[in-house]
Amino acid sequence: MPRYARWAERLAGVERLGRTRTLRTLEPTGPVTGRLDGRDVLVACSNDYLGLGTLPLAGRSGSGGSRLISGNHREHGRLERALASWLERDVLLFPSGWHANVAVFSTVCTADQRVASDALNHASVIDGLRLSRAQRIVVPHLDPSAVPDSVDLIALEGLYSMDGDIAPLASYPRGPWLAVDEAHSIGCLGSGGRGVAASQGVSPDILVGTFGKAFGSTGAFVAGPPELIALLVNTARSFIFTTSAPPGLLAVLADRLATIAAADDLRDRLAHNAATLRRHLADLGWTVLGDAHILPVLTGPETMEVADRLLRAGVFAPGIRHPTVPVGLERVRLTVSAAHTDIHLERIAEAFGPA
Image (cartoon, rainbow, N blue to C red; front, side):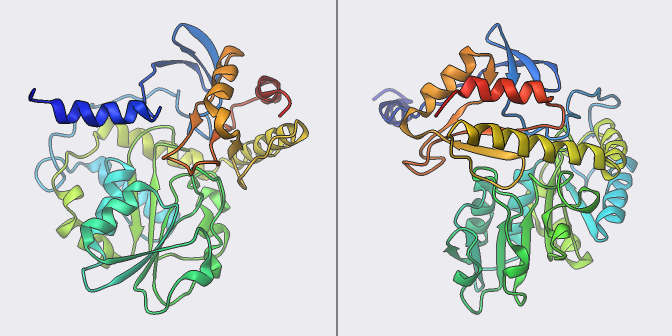
């Protein structure tokens, strides 16, 4: 048998199911425009919600190691203190949202504890819980009444990335620890952009945020009580054994945080754009899920054909199909940005056409 035959067999199985994924190179030409495979496109699928992602980054490009060895710099402390002041809780930086969630959920719970995890939680939450060996109880999506008694932690997202709906955090039991992944809501929702929990007057025990969405960059953070942060520094493998973020990037992010905290105009524009595009698509007969700036348009088994049609019209918004979403709920997942204009939104709707 050839050395890599087993891998080839698994890949062939993916191909037979029509689920092959490919990488496509997008060259940004502006906050919501770019070139894809030689074609000028209007981008309707980016997580750069506030349109800050094309602003220049500068400074030192390497950190020198993990933060517990040689990679802890002044810029790390500066950004953590700024985030802590903004969120009124201690903060620890991570290289990515995946690192942050795996750290949290593999560390805070132990094998003798029970965790209620929403059915649509991100893969990084699921993987972290698996590593913890805690008993994971998957509860129906956004159903507080389904949380069983005597769980030690409830794991939720503030704004769900595939359905675009907002968790009713205040309706969940108050006794267990509450962990909320605010990746898609931090910077975009709530007073000063502090997220869904802040908008609902809820103070979760653990809050995870990222810099890859509203901040238009990369990286993540965990916010919580001092005991949580110290525990992560001392026991979270995805913090201890990874290279830290470069100081130049962190310096830019600290400045960008100041911009985002005061960016009510961008948040208002983002909300306006989401409502406008949702209305345009509903008028055309499309079913659009969600509550905020993520707009999943249900397109059924013709999802990939719809995505191809959009691209031919110059709108880039890939189709999402099984196994990422259930069979029958295939969709084109639109994300709006504060940088979209009303003309951009009309163009996206026109590319869809009548349902």
